[in-house]
Length: 463
Image 1 (cartoon, rainbow, N blue to C red):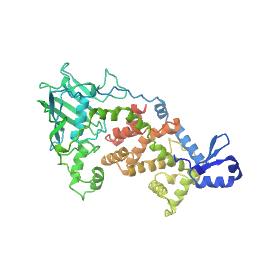
Image 2: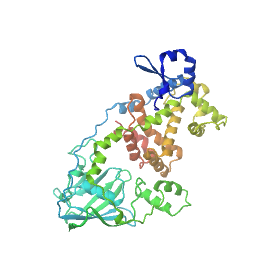
Image 3: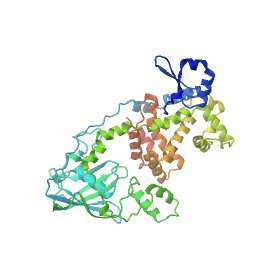
Image 4: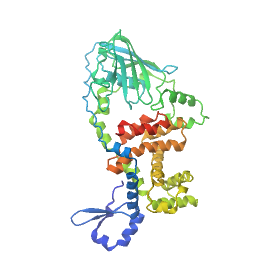
């Protein structure tokens, strides 16, 4: 929400002596008027329009499906706390040489790297990310045969409800030398469980350390890394088709996605820079990462501000402007809403009378679509896509469009995910969970559009 200006703090005496001007201010100014008495206690005065909006919103929320209420009422799973990696000792005499290449890509995209033999799998993960050119923005795992048991095991990032007897072993606790040898040379590395970038890791040699060389080291490689979040192998293949075809209908979309200057054939080992694995771990799992999440106020500043202003009287006034084709004097925000109304004119706006749109009509969620809530969600998600904030909303929308979803259908799916979390904001006054929202967008962007509603209903992350 916008902060209160100092000029909005009024004494009770002044307020009582000028009620007419106060009412006029409430109608003209979206900010509430704040009273403060001599004891320092404060109260807010809001307009009837804002009061109606809050009442309508709560009424709509109260009538949402009972299963959603049950899911939202469940306590959130607490994130496990992990012990960070031990810094790598500089006392090593040999290095592993690996060749890492992406599966199912022709011509091959590969890197040859050398790392200390006392590296952990976490250290190798960071080296692969940096050598390939990924952004380390998603989860990952290694799959490799355990030489002691002879069974294939998963090593990677533990889940939030980590159980040491199940799930992947933390990769910062497992050393490469315990698994790789000349008899056990292969592993699979998977990055981004949505796009599912599968890499094959081959231990080619164990070499003596060169004291004049700084490790890890990228020795060789071919071709550029695919752009992050480009939709896995199918999306990347579509991207390559567009690169050399500027007249294609999809060229502008892909150009916006990857930016200028992308050359899929270019790679230079000399340009690879390796991060410190311990610092990367701190950035990912340390206190700094958690504090960053807690500071998020994206929805408070933007979306909730829009919700507060979208009252029924204002909606009706904008609807009259649409019907009269009188859009010249509308603000950019109002014009956006008016255009959304035009898109929905035949869908449901013509189904309701003026009384429905201005009075205290309660919309039955079983038989009616609440136009106010629907238009509000449209305004929010369209702004997210336009601003690319969060970027995951933009990526989700484009992924749905690539799956042949119509523009309107893609917006509805994005709004469906957003609704799951807005419910908690209004009903339980919980802060908007931006990390969960972006995680859901990443998870579902590669699923079939017609399956997403059912998957959301049974998603354990929403329990």
